[in-house]
Length: 206
Figure 1 (cartoon, rainbow, N blue to C red):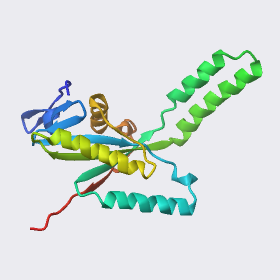
Figure 2: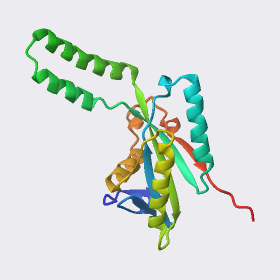
Figure 3: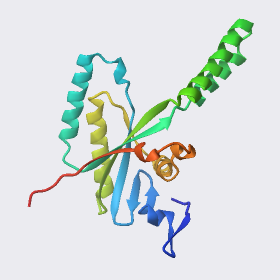
Figure 4: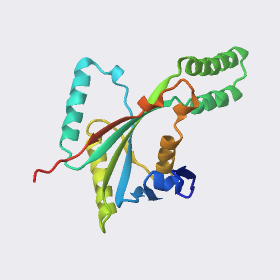
């Protein structure tokens, strides 16, 4: 990360990178100060409320199989975000420009206002899902992580889950979301419960 912020701990000054254990972010990888290389996948959410009970049960079974078969360590983060309505609003504003009929214009304008009010009044949240995989930094670590990431993508695709491997910019934005949580802007928000972390490690029997 190019940006460096200084913070003090017991008279000793540390950069934010040191505090977060970040050595470097380049291409599709984050390298830590303690010698780990991490790759990040973003998993697109699905609306399970549209499934029947049988469909939901089948979906859970298939996902359980794929996750339980994984023999390497991974971490899943579920991060709630406020719904971003900017694309929808821009689309409606462009639509309004091409309208001539007053009634149609009023309908589009009311649609925009109603959308703003719905999000503002109900504080609607959508979740973002991330999967982290990592390994100790060695000669072929990055190549192996890409293979593992693509393997995850193929396996999750069997469950109808679309994924993407984060690039350098996306990783930086993700890290910033931890250091500057959106929910911290609200004084009455306890954002300690807003990030759900699920870890799985493989304990080897000696």
